[in-house]
Amino acid sequence: MRSARSEAWRGVAYACAAYGSWGLLPIYWKALAAVPVGEVLAYRVVGSALFAALLVGLAREGRTVRAALGARRTVSVLAATSLLIGANWLLFIWTVSRGDVLASSLGYFLNPLVNVALGRVFLGERLRGLQLAAVALASLGVAVLAASAGGLPWVSLTLAITFGCYGLLRKLAPIPPLVSLLVETAALAPVALGYLTWVAARGEGHFVPASGEIRALLLGAGVVTALPLVWFSNAARRLRLGSLGFFQYLAPTGHFALAVLVYGEPFGRAHLVTFGCIWTGLLLYSVDAVRAARSATAPASEAAAVRAPGAAAGGGGRTGGSGVAPLGDPPV
Picture 1 (cartoon, rainbow, N blue to C red):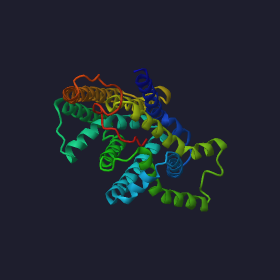
Picture 2 (cartoon, helix red, strand yellow):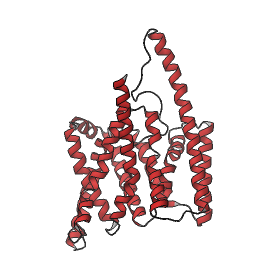
Picture 3 (tube, one colour):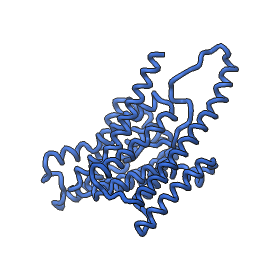
Picture 4 (cartoon, helix red, strand yellow):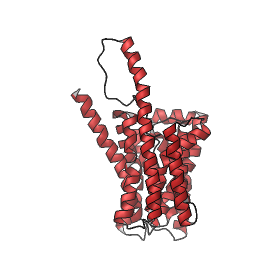
Protein backbone atom coordinates (compact mmCIF):
# COMPACT_ATOMS: atom_id res chain seq x y z
CA MET A 1 0.00 0.00 0.00
CA ARG A 2 2.79 2.38 0.92
CA SER A 3 4.56 1.64 -2.37
CA ALA A 4 1.39 2.28 -4.39
CA ARG A 5 0.82 5.55 -2.54
CA SER A 6 4.42 6.59 -3.16
CA GLU A 7 4.06 5.85 -6.86
CA ALA A 8 0.85 7.88 -6.99
CA TRP A 9 2.59 10.88 -5.41
CA ARG A 10 5.42 10.52 -7.92
CA GLY A 11 2.81 10.54 -10.66
CA VAL A 12 1.36 13.76 -9.28
CA ALA A 13 4.83 15.32 -9.20
CA TYR A 14 5.50 14.29 -12.81
CA ALA A 15 2.09 15.59 -13.92
CA CYS A 16 2.70 18.94 -12.21
CA ALA A 17 6.14 19.13 -13.82
CA ALA A 18 4.79 18.35 -17.30
CA TYR A 19 1.72 20.55 -17.35
CA GLY A 20 3.38 23.22 -15.22
CA SER A 21 6.24 23.50 -17.70
CA TRP A 22 3.78 23.73 -20.59
CA GLY A 23 2.00 26.48 -18.67
CA LEU A 24 5.24 28.46 -18.33
CA LEU A 25 6.41 27.86 -21.91
CA PRO A 26 5.30 31.32 -23.13
CA ILE A 27 8.17 32.78 -21.07
CA TYR A 28 10.62 30.82 -23.23
CA TRP A 29 9.20 31.92 -26.58
CA LYS A 30 8.75 35.47 -25.29
CA ALA A 31 12.50 35.61 -24.67
CA LEU A 32 13.02 34.76 -28.36
CA ALA A 33 10.65 37.45 -29.66
CA ALA A 34 13.53 39.24 -31.45
CA VAL A 35 14.15 36.18 -33.63
CA PRO A 36 11.79 35.61 -36.61
CA VAL A 37 9.09 33.07 -35.84
CA GLY A 38 10.04 30.82 -38.75
CA GLU A 39 13.61 30.56 -37.52
CA VAL A 40 12.51 29.79 -33.96
CA LEU A 41 10.20 27.08 -35.26
CA ALA A 42 12.98 25.57 -37.37
CA TYR A 43 15.33 25.34 -34.39
CA ARG A 44 12.51 23.83 -32.32
CA VAL A 45 11.80 21.17 -34.95
CA VAL A 46 15.44 20.20 -35.49
CA GLY A 47 16.25 20.30 -31.78
CA SER A 48 13.18 18.23 -30.92
CA ALA A 49 14.05 15.59 -33.51
CA LEU A 50 17.63 15.26 -32.21
CA PHE A 51 16.69 15.21 -28.51
CA ALA A 52 13.76 12.85 -29.09
CA ALA A 53 16.08 10.51 -31.00
CA LEU A 54 18.47 10.52 -28.04
CA LEU A 55 15.69 9.78 -25.55
CA VAL A 56 14.14 7.07 -27.72
CA GLY A 57 17.56 5.46 -28.04
CA LEU A 58 18.13 5.56 -24.29
CA ALA A 59 14.68 4.04 -23.74
CA ARG A 60 15.43 1.34 -26.33
CA GLU A 61 12.27 2.11 -28.25
CA GLY A 62 13.87 1.55 -31.65
CA ARG A 63 11.63 -1.44 -32.28
CA THR A 64 8.56 0.75 -31.67
CA VAL A 65 9.84 3.31 -34.18
CA ARG A 66 10.46 0.61 -36.80
CA ALA A 67 7.00 -0.85 -36.20
CA ALA A 68 5.41 2.58 -36.64
CA LEU A 69 7.31 3.24 -39.87
CA GLY A 70 6.46 -0.22 -41.15
CA ALA A 71 2.69 0.32 -40.91
CA ARG A 72 1.34 2.27 -43.87
CA ARG A 73 -1.69 3.55 -41.97
CA THR A 74 0.46 4.77 -39.08
CA VAL A 75 2.84 6.54 -41.45
CA SER A 76 -0.07 8.27 -43.18
CA VAL A 77 -1.51 9.41 -39.84
CA LEU A 78 1.84 10.66 -38.57
CA ALA A 79 2.44 12.54 -41.83
CA ALA A 80 -0.81 14.42 -41.21
CA THR A 81 -0.12 14.99 -37.52
CA SER A 82 3.35 16.33 -38.33
CA LEU A 83 1.73 19.08 -40.41
CA LEU A 84 -0.77 19.81 -37.64
CA ILE A 85 1.85 19.99 -34.92
CA GLY A 86 4.03 22.21 -37.12
CA ALA A 87 1.13 24.57 -37.76
CA ASN A 88 0.16 24.61 -34.07
CA TRP A 89 3.72 25.33 -32.95
CA LEU A 90 4.11 28.09 -35.54
CA LEU A 91 0.89 29.80 -34.51
CA PHE A 92 1.63 29.42 -30.80
CA ILE A 93 5.13 30.91 -31.05
CA TRP A 94 3.80 33.74 -33.24
CA THR A 95 0.97 34.45 -30.81
CA VAL A 96 3.32 34.64 -27.84
CA SER A 97 5.92 36.74 -29.65
CA ARG A 98 3.31 39.33 -30.66
CA GLY A 99 2.16 39.68 -27.04
CA ASP A 100 -1.15 37.81 -27.12
CA VAL A 101 -0.64 35.02 -24.58
CA LEU A 102 -4.28 35.42 -23.55
CA ALA A 103 -5.31 34.09 -26.97
CA SER A 104 -3.24 30.94 -26.44
CA SER A 105 -4.82 30.49 -23.01
CA LEU A 106 -8.29 30.73 -24.52
CA GLY A 107 -7.36 28.28 -27.27
CA TYR A 108 -6.09 25.58 -24.93
CA PHE A 109 -9.00 26.07 -22.51
CA LEU A 110 -11.30 25.52 -25.49
CA ASN A 111 -9.47 22.38 -26.59
CA PRO A 112 -11.25 19.76 -24.41
CA LEU A 113 -14.61 21.08 -25.57
CA VAL A 114 -13.45 21.14 -29.20
CA ASN A 115 -12.43 17.50 -28.72
CA VAL A 116 -15.99 16.68 -27.68
CA ALA A 117 -17.38 18.42 -30.78
CA LEU A 118 -14.90 16.64 -33.07
CA GLY A 119 -15.80 13.31 -31.49
CA ARG A 120 -19.46 13.98 -32.23
CA VAL A 121 -18.84 15.02 -35.85
CA PHE A 122 -16.19 12.49 -36.91
CA LEU A 123 -16.63 9.54 -34.55
CA GLY A 124 -20.38 9.68 -34.06
CA GLU A 125 -20.02 9.97 -30.29
CA ARG A 126 -23.23 11.01 -28.56
CA LEU A 127 -23.19 14.10 -26.37
CA ARG A 128 -24.62 13.66 -22.90
CA GLY A 129 -26.62 16.48 -21.38
CA LEU A 130 -23.78 18.14 -19.47
CA GLN A 131 -21.43 17.76 -22.43
CA LEU A 132 -23.95 19.49 -24.69
CA ALA A 133 -24.37 22.29 -22.15
CA ALA A 134 -20.58 22.67 -21.89
CA VAL A 135 -20.15 23.00 -25.66
CA ALA A 136 -23.08 25.45 -25.82
CA LEU A 137 -21.53 27.60 -23.08
CA ALA A 138 -18.16 27.64 -24.86
CA SER A 139 -19.89 28.65 -28.10
CA LEU A 140 -21.68 31.44 -26.28
CA GLY A 141 -18.39 32.67 -24.82
CA VAL A 142 -16.74 32.74 -28.25
CA ALA A 143 -19.75 34.57 -29.69
CA VAL A 144 -19.53 37.24 -26.96
CA LEU A 145 -15.83 37.81 -27.65
CA ALA A 146 -16.45 37.88 -31.41
CA ALA A 147 -19.21 40.47 -31.03
CA SER A 148 -16.99 42.61 -28.80
CA ALA A 149 -13.91 42.43 -31.02
CA GLY A 150 -15.78 42.65 -34.32
CA GLY A 151 -14.64 39.22 -35.48
CA LEU A 152 -14.00 35.66 -34.38
CA PRO A 153 -10.97 34.98 -32.15
CA TRP A 154 -9.40 33.06 -35.01
CA VAL A 155 -6.03 32.57 -33.30
CA SER A 156 -7.60 30.84 -30.29
CA LEU A 157 -9.95 28.80 -32.46
CA THR A 158 -7.14 27.70 -34.78
CA LEU A 159 -4.97 26.64 -31.84
CA ALA A 160 -7.86 24.63 -30.39
CA ILE A 161 -8.87 23.07 -33.72
CA THR A 162 -5.36 22.11 -34.84
CA PHE A 163 -4.67 20.59 -31.42
CA GLY A 164 -8.06 18.86 -31.45
CA CYS A 165 -7.53 17.41 -34.94
CA TYR A 166 -4.05 16.30 -33.87
CA GLY A 167 -5.54 14.38 -30.95
CA LEU A 168 -8.30 12.95 -33.15
CA LEU A 169 -5.81 11.57 -35.66
CA ARG A 170 -3.51 10.26 -32.94
CA LYS A 171 -6.37 8.00 -31.85
CA LEU A 172 -5.75 6.17 -35.13
CA ALA A 173 -2.05 5.69 -34.33
CA PRO A 174 -1.68 5.04 -30.58
CA ILE A 175 2.10 5.07 -30.15
CA PRO A 176 4.20 6.46 -27.26
CA PRO A 177 4.48 10.28 -27.13
CA LEU A 178 8.25 10.41 -27.60
CA VAL A 179 8.12 8.03 -30.55
CA SER A 180 5.42 10.11 -32.24
CA LEU A 181 7.39 13.31 -31.52
CA LEU A 182 10.49 11.76 -33.10
CA VAL A 183 8.69 10.63 -36.25
CA GLU A 184 6.74 13.87 -36.64
CA THR A 185 9.69 16.20 -36.13
CA ALA A 186 11.96 14.00 -38.25
CA ALA A 187 9.45 14.42 -41.08
CA LEU A 188 9.62 18.21 -40.70
CA ALA A 189 13.37 18.40 -40.03
CA PRO A 190 14.54 18.45 -43.68
CA VAL A 191 12.35 21.46 -44.39
CA ALA A 192 13.52 23.15 -41.17
CA LEU A 193 17.19 22.48 -41.98
CA GLY A 194 16.68 23.73 -45.51
CA TYR A 195 15.15 26.95 -44.20
CA LEU A 196 17.98 27.51 -41.71
CA THR A 197 20.56 26.90 -44.46
CA TRP A 198 18.76 29.30 -46.78
CA VAL A 199 18.57 32.18 -44.29
CA ALA A 200 22.22 31.60 -43.30
CA ALA A 201 23.32 31.71 -46.96
CA ARG A 202 21.48 35.02 -47.40
CA GLY A 203 23.16 36.43 -44.32
CA GLU A 204 19.78 36.76 -42.57
CA GLY A 205 20.25 34.11 -39.90
CA HIS A 206 20.03 35.27 -36.30
CA PHE A 207 22.09 32.58 -34.59
CA VAL A 208 25.62 33.85 -35.33
CA PRO A 209 25.09 37.54 -34.51
CA ALA A 210 22.87 36.78 -31.52
CA SER A 211 23.91 37.00 -27.89
CA GLY A 212 25.00 33.90 -26.00
CA GLU A 213 21.63 33.82 -24.22
CA ILE A 214 19.66 33.76 -27.47
CA ARG A 215 21.91 31.06 -28.90
CA ALA A 216 21.40 28.93 -25.80
CA LEU A 217 17.63 29.38 -26.01
CA LEU A 218 17.56 28.40 -29.69
CA LEU A 219 19.67 25.31 -29.02
CA GLY A 220 17.52 24.38 -26.03
CA ALA A 221 14.21 24.60 -27.90
CA GLY A 222 14.16 20.85 -28.49
CA VAL A 223 14.88 20.06 -24.87
CA VAL A 224 12.00 22.19 -23.52
CA THR A 225 9.73 20.50 -26.07
CA ALA A 226 10.65 16.87 -25.45
CA LEU A 227 11.47 16.80 -21.74
CA PRO A 228 7.90 17.54 -20.56
CA LEU A 229 6.76 14.56 -22.64
CA VAL A 230 9.06 12.34 -20.57
CA TRP A 231 7.43 13.68 -17.40
CA PHE A 232 3.98 13.25 -18.96
CA SER A 233 4.73 9.61 -19.82
CA ASN A 234 6.00 8.94 -16.29
CA ALA A 235 2.83 10.52 -14.86
CA ALA A 236 0.60 8.48 -17.17
CA ARG A 237 2.21 5.24 -15.98
CA ARG A 238 1.50 6.07 -12.33
CA LEU A 239 -1.91 7.79 -12.39
CA ARG A 240 -5.37 6.86 -13.49
CA LEU A 241 -6.27 8.57 -16.74
CA GLY A 242 -9.18 10.28 -14.98
CA SER A 243 -6.83 11.75 -12.40
CA LEU A 244 -4.31 12.81 -15.02
CA GLY A 245 -7.03 14.60 -16.98
CA PHE A 246 -7.49 17.24 -14.29
CA PHE A 247 -3.88 18.37 -14.62
CA GLN A 248 -4.32 19.39 -18.26
CA TYR A 249 -5.95 22.64 -17.14
CA LEU A 250 -2.66 23.73 -15.53
CA ALA A 251 -1.17 24.69 -18.91
CA PRO A 252 -3.82 27.20 -20.08
CA THR A 253 -4.14 28.45 -16.49
CA GLY A 254 -0.41 29.22 -16.56
CA HIS A 255 -0.84 31.06 -19.86
CA PHE A 256 -3.74 33.02 -18.41
CA ALA A 257 -1.82 34.01 -15.27
CA LEU A 258 1.20 35.11 -17.31
CA ALA A 259 -0.94 37.13 -19.73
CA VAL A 260 -2.94 39.00 -17.09
CA LEU A 261 -0.63 39.17 -14.07
CA VAL A 262 2.84 39.32 -15.64
CA TYR A 263 2.51 40.74 -19.15
CA GLY A 264 -0.43 43.04 -18.38
CA GLU A 265 -2.45 42.13 -21.47
CA PRO A 266 -5.89 43.78 -21.72
CA PHE A 267 -8.61 41.79 -19.98
CA GLY A 268 -11.98 43.50 -20.38
CA ARG A 269 -15.57 42.63 -19.65
CA ALA A 270 -15.94 40.59 -22.84
CA HIS A 271 -12.93 38.47 -21.87
CA LEU A 272 -14.41 37.98 -18.41
CA VAL A 273 -17.71 36.75 -19.86
CA THR A 274 -15.95 34.54 -22.42
CA PHE A 275 -13.59 32.89 -19.96
CA GLY A 276 -16.42 32.61 -17.43
CA CYS A 277 -18.52 30.68 -19.94
CA ILE A 278 -15.65 28.40 -20.87
CA TRP A 279 -14.60 27.75 -17.27
CA THR A 280 -18.21 26.92 -16.39
CA GLY A 281 -18.39 24.64 -19.42
CA LEU A 282 -15.20 22.87 -18.35
CA LEU A 283 -16.60 22.43 -14.87
CA LEU A 284 -19.76 20.82 -16.27
CA TYR A 285 -17.68 18.68 -18.58
CA SER A 286 -15.45 17.50 -15.72
CA VAL A 287 -18.49 16.65 -13.56
CA ASP A 288 -19.93 14.64 -16.45
CA ALA A 289 -16.63 12.82 -16.99
CA VAL A 290 -16.34 11.91 -13.32
CA ARG A 291 -19.91 10.55 -13.35
CA ALA A 292 -19.20 8.54 -16.49
CA ALA A 293 -15.99 7.16 -14.98
CA ARG A 294 -17.80 6.07 -11.81
CA SER A 295 -20.64 4.44 -13.72
CA ALA A 296 -18.15 2.59 -15.92
CA THR A 297 -16.04 1.49 -12.97
CA ALA A 298 -18.92 0.16 -10.86
CA PRO A 299 -19.94 -2.72 -13.21
CA ALA A 300 -16.27 -3.66 -13.65
CA SER A 301 -15.83 -3.79 -9.88
CA GLU A 302 -18.95 -5.94 -9.48
CA ALA A 303 -17.75 -8.30 -12.19
CA ALA A 304 -14.34 -8.58 -10.51
CA ALA A 305 -16.05 -9.34 -7.20
CA VAL A 306 -18.05 -12.13 -8.83
CA ARG A 307 -14.90 -13.62 -10.37
CA ALA A 308 -12.88 -13.34 -7.15
CA PRO A 309 -15.23 -12.83 -4.20
CA GLY A 310 -12.42 -13.03 -1.63
CA ALA A 311 -10.01 -10.68 -3.37
CA ALA A 312 -9.02 -7.39 -1.82
CA ALA A 313 -9.90 -4.21 -3.65
CA GLY A 314 -7.10 -3.04 -5.91
CA GLY A 315 -5.72 0.46 -5.98
CA GLY A 316 -3.46 2.70 -7.97
CA GLY A 317 -2.64 2.16 -11.60
CA ARG A 318 -3.77 4.22 -14.55
CA THR A 319 -5.98 1.74 -16.33
CA GLY A 320 -9.12 2.38 -14.35
CA GLY A 321 -11.56 5.15 -15.00
CA SER A 322 -11.95 7.44 -17.91
CA GLY A 323 -10.18 10.65 -18.77
CA VAL A 324 -11.68 13.97 -17.75
CA ALA A 325 -10.85 15.08 -21.23
CA PRO A 326 -9.27 13.39 -24.24
CA LEU A 327 -5.53 13.52 -23.62
CA GLY A 328 -3.15 13.91 -26.50
CA ASP A 329 0.46 15.04 -26.58
CA PRO A 330 0.14 18.76 -25.92
CA PRO A 331 1.96 20.40 -28.84
CA VAL A 332 2.49 23.78 -27.16
